[in-house]
Image (cartoon, rainbow, N blue to C red):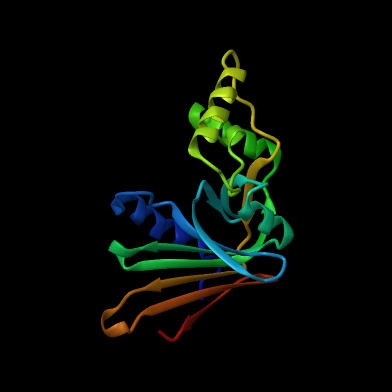
Length: 192
């Protein structure tokens, strides 16, 4: 039995980075609101390691609000051309300010300005309103670096369960599952 699934994740993710044409770091993020109603959307993996899988968002948008109210999530990486997917489940925690600041600083200036201009996931009566807000933020920060907005940061999914799925002919798929224990990881197989 393996004691750590992260080496396998690194191997599969490395292969996807070589072969996937667009956004090999794209992952489906599933959340649930306080009443338990699910929601799923695509986000981009921006960091990973034994402490978890990191993505960034507006904390005042739908996903941010759901994660703050119910800090549990599931991730799905699906690389169709490789015939592989990885499912990750676990609790969610905010990243620290230094980590969020460093990532925000690495973004393009327009992406930084967009984080200030957007009321993410809220109704927008017409595109011109957002474009006007963007222009106002652009003017506000014309002579300075764009700081990270207080409502914008990252989350880390701390995996408790990781499943590696490989497509096989006749739907006889190969599924390996790792479950976190108090002493490390247990590995097992699942029926296709």
